View 1 (cartoon, one colour):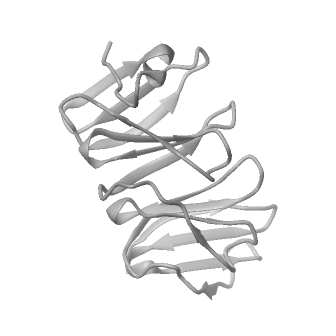
View 2: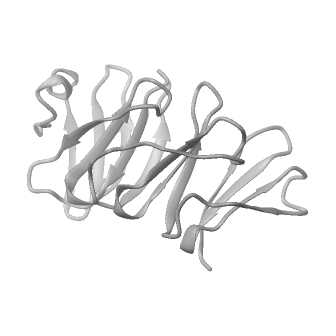
View 3: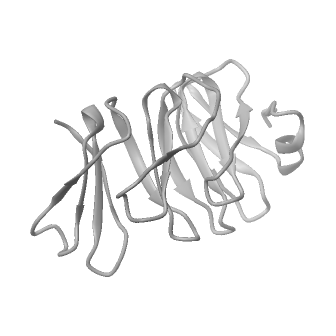
Length: 162
């Protein structure tokens, strides 16, 4: 299977997400791996560690799962979307940002327990979204790039391009 992402979760610890719901962890910098029970059989496109240490995994059909015990158990985070989530990152201020198909940007300010949805006009597939120091977001994707001003993030979930 294709490996989508490997992240560091500790000094010697790694965590891996892949196609077909494959999850694995390593406590020895990748010398050996332990397969973990997956909460979902579809593909995961990424993982990240939140500011409070929780693991988040995301991927096909808008699926996001959260673990507070290093991937042993998972809780589904309901987003109410079916678009694939292509990338994610942890902003300097602790916000979690996920970018997806259909112009979807999901943002969490509570370490991935809940998310608010923002949609880019024209619904482009997004590859990446990054938080800026002034609170705005920059995004790039399929024939799309832009900036969402901080004030627009509170505008009923509808992002406006600048």
